[in-house]
Length: 58
Image 1 (cartoon, rainbow, N blue to C red):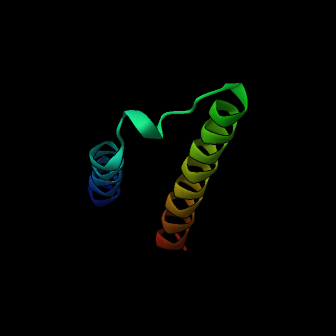
Image 2: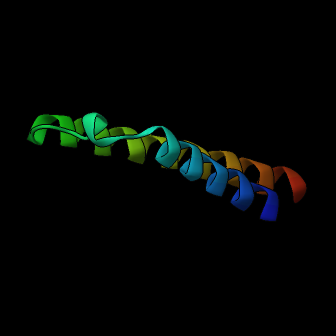
């Protein structure tokens, strides 16, 4: 599980490293789209983590 935590921390670092002021959402729709993308990515990561946990317990 610590490997997954490290992977998530690395993803955050990569996202912060490549973003700059020009990449920030400029209006409500862009902000909404950005948050929706982030939530989708989080959901996918948790689903993968859940699948891995279930496979260990089989």
